[in-house]
Image (cartoon, rainbow, N blue to C red):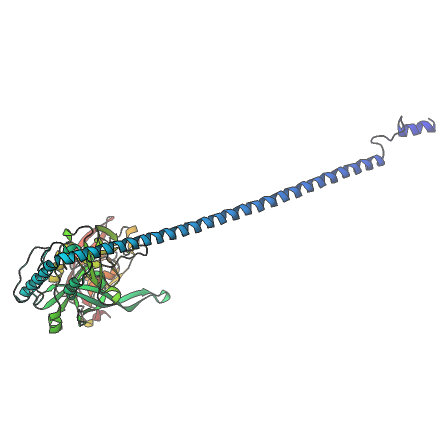
Length: 509
C-alpha cells in the first residue's frame, strides 16, 4: 500500500474525518452539547424569573383585594353604626314628642276635669278625712275587712297581730289622673320609711384568701301595721340580707334601730320590727300604716306612684303606669319571680318602697334588684295580693335578733362553698354542702356526715353556706334546732330530718 492509499484510509473516500474517529471530533461534539445545555439552562432561568414575577404580581393583587374588602367592611360597619345611632336618636325624639303631646293632652284634660269636678273632689277629701278621724278616735277598733282592703289604725296600733286596714272611698274619675299626685303623696308618705343597713361582705383577695369588710346599704320600707308593743315594716329580703345593723328613718327624720321579724328569701320579702317604746311620741303621731289595696284589680295602663329612698337620697316620688302582669324575671343570682311591670322609675334604694294606685292604696312592693344597661323605662314590683298573707305570717313570727357574741352557736362542720353552677352540673341539691365533720362536735353527735347537704334550719330554707351562717346568728348555743339534710344514698339524694343541739362557739375556740 502506498502513502496515498494510507491517507485515504485515514480520511475516508471524500477526504473527511471519520464520524467517531479522532479527538477533534469528540471535542466538537462536546462543545456543541455544552452550548445546547447552557442555552437550555438560560431558558430555564428566564422561565423561573417570569414565574416569580407572575407570583409577585398575583400576591400584590391579592393583598390589594383584601385591603379593599377590609376597607369596604369597615365602611359598612361605620354606616350601620351611624344608621343605628340615627335610628336610636329618631326613636328617642319620637318618644319625647309623644310624651310632650300626651302631657299636653293630659294637662288639658286635667284642667277640664278640675273645672267640672272641683266640688266633688273637695267633698271626697272631706269624707276621707272624716273617716280617718273616726278611726283615730277609736283605739279599740280592730275590725278586719276583706284581703284587698286592710290597714292598721293610724293613731293607735291594734293589739291584734294582723294587718288592719281601712279602705279609701271609691271615686269616679280621679283614679286615672296622675298629672298632680301631691295630695296623694302627702297622705301616704308618712307610711314609707328609709332603711340603712350595715352588713358584712366577703371578698376574695387572691393570695390572702377571703376577707370580710363592713359595707353600708340603703333601701326602703312600708309601715304595714303592728300591735301594742311593736311596729311592723315590710321591705325586700335583699335589702336586709346579711345585715348586722338595721336603722329606720321615719318621715320626720327620726332614726330607730330595727330587727328582723321574719323573712322569705324566695319571695324577696322581709318584715322588720321596732319596739314602740323606742319611738318618740311625736314620731308616733306623724306616722301611720299604709292602706293595703289589691293588685288583682289593676288594669293595664292604670296610673301608679312609687315612693322610696332612691340612691339613698331620702324619699323620692316617681309616677308611671302598669305596663304588664306576671313578668317572669330572672335575677343575677339565678332566682326568678313573677313581678308587676311598671313604667315608673325604680332605682337602687327604691327596693322595699311603696307602689301605690291613684287612691293611695299599697298595691306593690318596689323591687330594684333587676338592672340592665339596655333596659329603659321598665320597673318591677312585687304585687301585693301575692304576698299579703306572707306578710302577715312573717309579722307573727318571733323577733329575729342576732344573739350576743358569748351565745354564738357552733356546729363543728367544715363547709365547701360550691358555686350553684358546679352543684347543678353534678346534680348536687342547693344548700350548705358539708365537706368534713369534726370529731366530738354537735354535728357528729347528731349524725351529720361528710357530703350531706343542709337545706333547711327550723323551717327556713337554706340555699347556700352563706344562708346557713346568716340563719345561725339568730340561734343561741344550747338550743335545739331541726335540720333538713339531703344525703346521697344508692345514687340519689334522700331527705332526712335531724334534731341537733347547738354548741357554744366560745367552748370550741
